[in-house]
Amino acid sequence: MTPLVLALVAGAVIGLALGALGGGGSVLAVPALIYLLGFTPVEATTASLIIVTATSATALYAHARDGNVAWKTGSLFAAAGIVPAFLAGAVAGRLPAALLTAAFAAIAALAALRMLRPSGSEPPGRIRTGKAAGAGAGLGAVTGFLGVGGGFLAVPALVSVLGLAMRRAVGTSLLVITVNSLAALTARAGTGDGLQWEVIGPFTAAAILGAWDGKRLATKISGAALQKIFAGVLLAVAAFMLADVIA
Image 1: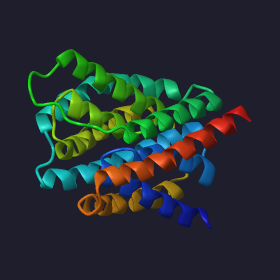
Image 2: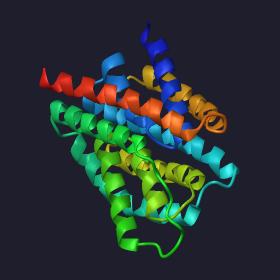
Image 3: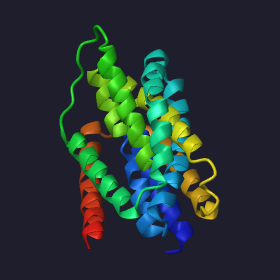
C-alpha cells in the first residue's frame, strides 16, 4: 500500500479507538508512524502530538455536546500536567531513538494491562487533591515524553481518584489529553520542519473522522469487549517494539 493509504487506514483505526474508549488509540500512532510510514522515533512522537491534539479536541466537542465533560474537574486535573508535559516534551527530542522506543513499548504494555483490569468507580466524595495532582502531573509527563494522549491512564484516574462516572470520565479525559498535548507541542515548537505533512494531514483527518464513528460505536458494543480487543493489539505492538530494540 502507498503511504497515503497506510496513513488513512492507521488514522481511522486510532480515531475509532480514541472516540470509543477515551484513550488508548493514540498509543498506536507512534508505532504506526515509525514502522508503517518511516518516521524516526523523535519525528513520530512530535507528529503523534499533532494528530492526538486535533483528534482529541474533535472528540471532546462531541462528548461535550452530550454533557459528558466535567469541565471544572478536568481543568484542574489538566492544569497539574501542563508544566510536566512542557518539560518532558522539551527533553524527549534530545534522547536516543532506542531509549524512546523502549520506553514507548513499556507504556504500550502498561496501557494494555490497564485495559484488561476491571475498573469500578468509587462513590463521589472528598477529592484527594494531592493524589489528583500527582496523577495529572504524571499523565502530563507521559504525554510530553512519548507523544501519547495518555487517556488509558486518565480515565481510570478520573474514575478512582475523582469519582467520575465512566462516561463522564471518558469525555473529561479528552479535555485533559487536549491540554497536555498542546503544552507538549509548544515545547517542541521548531522541531517539525522535517515532518512529512503530506502524510500527517491525511492521517489526522482520518483519525478525526474515526473518532466520530468511535463515539457511535461505544453505544453499540460493550466497553469491556472493546478494551479486551484493543489490549491484545497493544500487547502485540509492545512486544514487537521491544524485540526491535533488542535486535
